[in-house]
Image (spheres, rainbow, N blue to C red):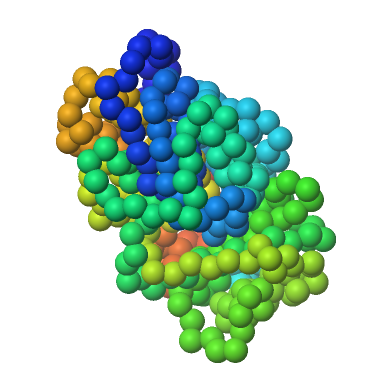
Amino acid sequence: MVWSDPLLRHKTSPMKHAVTIAGGGLAGLSLGIALRMRGVPVTLHEAGTYPRHRVCGEFISGVTDSTLETLGIAEDFLTATSLTSAVWHDTRGRVCELQVAGRGISRWRLDDALQRRFTTLGGTLATHSRIAPAPGTIWAAGRPRRHGPWIGLKCHATNLPLSHDLEMHLGSNGYIGLAPIEDGKVNICGLFKKSPTRGAKGTSLLTTILREGGLHDTADRLESATLDSSAFCGVAGFETGRQPSEGFSIGDATHMIPPFTGNGMSMAFESAETALPHALSYARGECSWDSASSSCAADLENRFRARMLASAAIHTLLTSPKASRLATTLARSSLLPIQPLLHLLR
């Protein structure tokens, strides 16, 4: 579903309602930009500030140029690193190679560029600001806190040569991806089962967990590189999949796809694109808030249902020791259709 020219039809007409957005990540900022382009008064509340590091693969794959143009943010990707090749490894070595179509850019750079675009368009941005859900507020404040078995870790590195544009490494306790971003840096981001590790923290926690999962060669490479401790961050208390959201919600607040797919950032933009016509209808007084909210939720579910189901199944396969060993054995023998499986996640 692509929403383009028809959404501009009343750009200069007065709006009956302003829109508030809670959360200044990719979904919230891009929706705010798209609404401002169409004349909607928008106030966006962000709990943090910019620029900032986020736990994120910083690998954008699947989003179309049409979606970026509809949101008014295509120019912000002109300097992103083009990524076309990928390889999977496990503790026994290389599993398979595949072709990808992706962009690499840090959240430090991208979020900052988007917030500047939003304010340049006349949007009101309140940083260090938290608000509660309410009618007229679109919830883009990320995943809800949930008890879950996973932790996410991320940092940047220089002097880290890669064999492919994207390297994925599967251990017994999770997986990690390495991908180039700007300025010769490599983003390192992984999802791991919670560990009883004690004493290690920061980047040493990352390499310790890699060794616990049997990825000793990967840990050695990271320890030989120059790791940027200022970019290190972690997150816990989440589950991937459909999130228990209420009201008018977008982004990770509704669907959080497992990170191995490389589709999380793209889904944030697609979520904003899906929400755009419903938020516009409310701002123009063409529908009630409840109607806009329920219609958006239905469209989001229709848009993401298939890839969420596919990703959940593959994620379970990858993180089950016996199943992942069977899957990687089949992939090594070219008996597992890896490239077609990738298309199920887009």
